[in-house]
Length: 139
Image 1: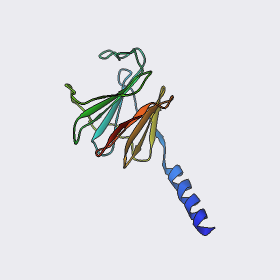
Image 2: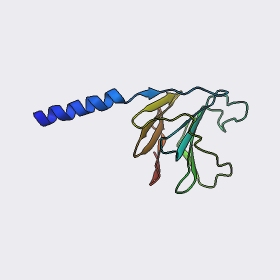
Image 3: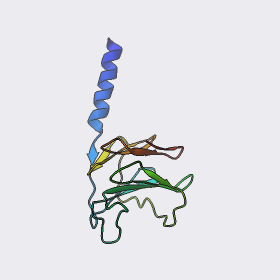
Image 4: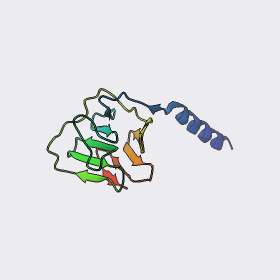
């Protein structure tokens, strides 16, 4: 019984630490990065921004991983996420807004959770992706 109580107390403590973070929009676009500096994301609202229009009109969540190979993951308003491995406009992870480990971010139909193991992002219908230095997955 004592072991169960300690396990429950540990879960409550983790939940108390975890928080939903928000970041300011710049021209409607929101940027955030993982604490590792290896993954960075950009949220573009429906209708796009002054400099970018998502292929399907948006909203869109795009995340880039720098190493061990540069990859970009795009999750649009419908369908599965897409992975791009030959990205011509590499530019990731300026470090200005950090989604701390254990915290989450939500905007529109998208949500992301940051963990030391990696970044999990999904749309409210369950489609999404996982990115870490050691592996990537589309689900």
